[in-house]
Image (cartoon, rainbow, N blue to C red; front, side):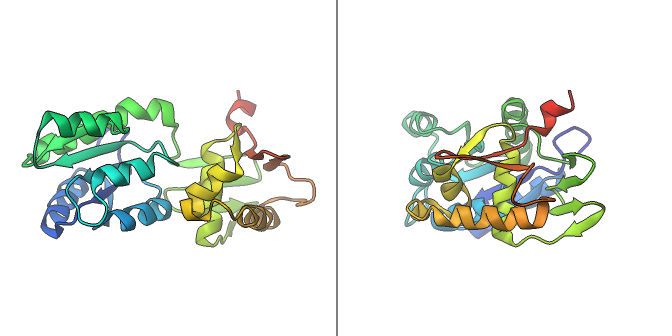
Length: 239
């Protein structure tokens, strides 16, 4: 793509494999990176793994339908969601929008319509979600490229485990803001871990050991006692 939306990650959730292939082919043709999920539970797990910029979510699925998945997602993320429906009924559209969907597309749809809707929602939301694309220069010492999943410290590549990477992503995404223990548990580990706060403390310590010059006196990942953690507001520091 020639505009600023290239390299965006799209998660496609649909139990029909042919539909997923059709959507994937057309989105990739337009420059998007595409991940797949074929049911609701898989979608929630994939969200934590791939940190998409937008989700295409089918309504009619077995086990968990699209509305149930959307409600679960909205408990811990504001990632834009476009609902896919074969019905096109007003009740379905209203129900999805009331539960936090950003738009809907009625099946059957043309590739041109789908890509247009995806771009429109991304443009509408990118100003409020903040850009996490390209090389982020935290300071002269630390640089992060979430697109390539690379963390550079003093010119050397730092290897992070998947959970450490997801935790760092959500901290940096909210740089300057305090993120509570509960929010981090839901975003990184999942809602079922909401009563396991020690996971957050343990992995914060792992990140500090790998990124901080002095883990006992951190400069990047700051503790807000009794509340949560805050990543240094590197964007404001450069203004």
